[in-house]
Image 1 (tube, one colour):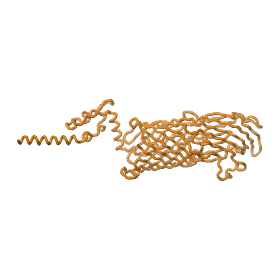
Image 2 (cartoon, helix red, strand yellow):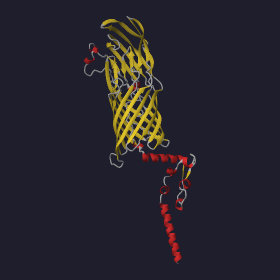
Image 3 (cartoon, one colour):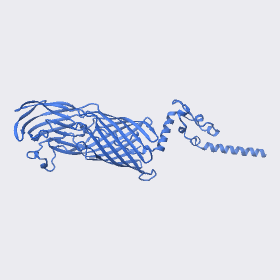
Image 4 (spheres, helix red, strand yellow):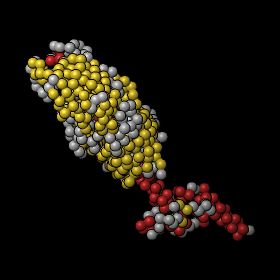
Length: 483
């Protein structure tokens, strides 16, 4: 009887121990499989599965044998290990998106028989900046961005000048694929800007044309004003090349499609004009011109991006891109003109524009741009359990844009004939009057995370010379909704 009781008690203890072990989750018994995986150490090939019972557990206990045995491919294990280590140690996914700056480009001017500057956003004057509202990391998100560019569109017709603001509202989204290693982004800009049908007519009668200070209040040489229009839609493909601990490197391609309206600039004058490049020369001009610029250029922008977060507070990120025009846009000029020329108010003669009018054609070539965008940030507040504000980050950025080639000037030859005889060497030229540009902008901003939303405010100040600066200042608000 005593032996029976002893055996029964021993059996009870064994059963209790086995039951306790069986109730423990497998992950708590064996740890994270990915943490033990190392192809360089155990010699496993990339195509061979890992047998948990031999590669991880070593000696298997009876209680662990009760759980179903799993096989984990090395690729999945590697991905889990990288993602787990990155999220735990670096927190790079919490780095705010860059603010970016304007999409300034190389603005167009007319010269020769016409002395006109038309910095319209469609005419190569506003180009894609991939760093705007972007991160080197592929991300699932929807976003909205508002940007105000003060005095961003400068216009000039001979001695008459006028500036216009640009307000850009951008809707977009980014979706990852291929196990989160790549993403596809689309940007849809809606802009309130100088209309695509500007005009100039009956500019001003003497004697006001000689003294801009005598212009009447509210004088506007460029008619048509501002108007809401669709801009050029952009697509961005991004691929994560390297991600370890606190560093990530990615690359990709941005494509800008010519979805904005064509520009049709109508010039009608019956006034006295002066030529800033020809001192003492003026003309009583009666001219009708229609300059039609087709928006046909597709832009390609390969880029390299990086992100480094050495600790939980400080980070640095940047984008380097080169943007190339895949094709030119066509320019068509139609019209006629009659001019009485004066030198120091003494009549010289009359010239009539006869060739190639009524129609002349040429192409507008956009210059290749390089952009270097650098950003730094410091997390002032980081409390994921807070009810309202979980994170607050101060941001500082510097953006540099430069041309990589000289401007290509396109010309439409014009022969004029009148009392002075025939002059076949005149022309209407189109292109960037500055030739090469170097633009430097500084950005200050704050990014706040509340719940599932990220709000960023930024102000951009140009540091370039007055001729090259693309605006007086820029204000930006961007809203992210990761998913």
